[in-house]
Structures are given as C-alpha cells and as structure tokens.
Length: 199
Image 1 (spheres, helix red, strand yellow):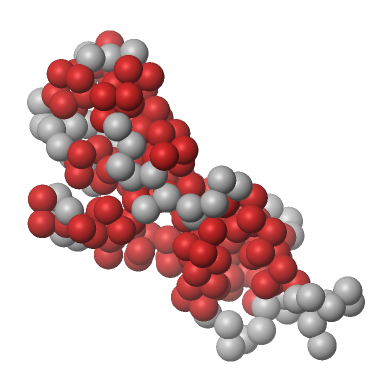
Image 2 (cartoon, helix red, strand yellow; image 1 turned 90 degrees about the vertical axis):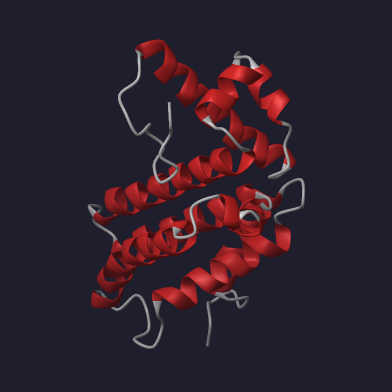
C-alpha cells in the first residue's frame, strides 16, 4: 500500500492493526532521530516499534519516505500548537512559547532537514517549501497578536524570529542536551543579557 509522504496518514484507509503499526513506526522513528540523528538504524526502529523490517518497508519503502513522514508529522504538530496557543489570553507568552517549541522541534531533528535535502531527488521535492510556508503562516498569526498588544517591535518579522530559533537549534543539535540548550539560548536572545531586559 502506497503511503502519502505529505501526511502522517496513509493515502488510503488501513486496517486497524496496520494503522497501529504505521503510527508506532512513526513515533519510534521520531524518538530514534532525536536520540541518534537522521541516520538512525531502520532495523532498530522496527525492533523498538515491535514490527519486522518487512512491515516497516511495506509502509515506508525507503529511508527518505520515513524521514519525510516524520518531518511532516512534526510540522503538523508545531502548527497545531500555534493554533492552540492563539486561543490563549496572553499573545506575548503565546509567541514565546511557540518559538520555544520551534527551537525544540529543530534541535530534536538532529540532521533530519539536511538528510531530507540530500535525498530530495528520491522523495517529495515540494516538502521543504510546503512545510516552511505552513510554519511561517502559523507563526505569523501569533506575531500579529503579540504586536497588537505592543509586545513585539514593528520591524520584527516572523522570518527573523524563525531564523533566530533555527540558528540557535542548529548550533546545539548535536549536543546531548541540545533541546534544553536551545530553549535556554532562545530565551536569552529574546530577553537580552541585562537583568532589567534590553536597553
């Protein structure tokens, strides 16, 4: 059965047991990538997911397809988080919380984006651009609300903030505590080093 690499859901309905296997493989792959990077062993992912290698390859015929599905699922979750935060009462806190989620997302990818780019000829060539647009649109809504309450300068764009979050995450993604470091450094960048805040 062909899987749609643009979504964490299969292209056609699946039996319940196949759906459970599919979801388990995706969740396990995301954990393995966070631990070992994008070159995590497919055999180990299958073993930890409680399925055979044949089952993994039936759902994901190549490493590229599995990585695409993991990345797409992470982006969908990040955008859903933005939607949830937008309903909150504090626009500034919503934006900061979401940027921390972006930094965590990027730091936990551990080479995933670079690996996807290297294998782009074997996968979906539009995945990167589509995911980027989704993330920018999700963040833009939070930034607009934060700007409306005077929490963000008018000359700051969502691209500025995403570049900052991703640059910090890229710098620490290979560290054992990269996710924690990314959150701390992002907080430092957003608040400044002076105890009273930026002057």
